[in-house]
Image (tube, rainbow, N blue to C red; front, top):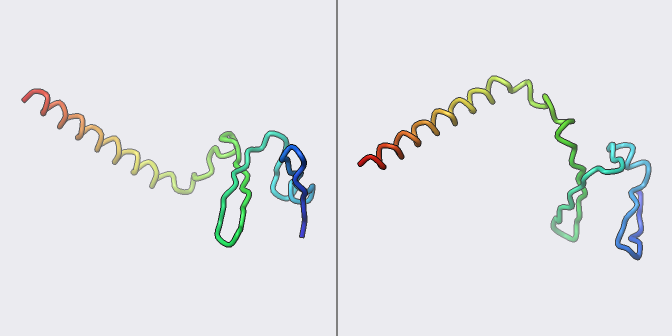
Length: 86
């Protein structure tokens, strides 16, 4: 178990072993999530550039969803135009 101490400026040094294991480097964004029973989770947020292609195995499903949304937007726009004319 690793420990860290909060400084007088409310800063926490994350132990090296943890930083290396999770790829936390200078400038890495982190999110704190409060859980039950006094639990606090720290989650590192990868930059968008690291997420490129992360869901490529679901490409066809995502493209179908995009097409469906575009179709729905076109139908809604057509209905709005029809309402304005009447």
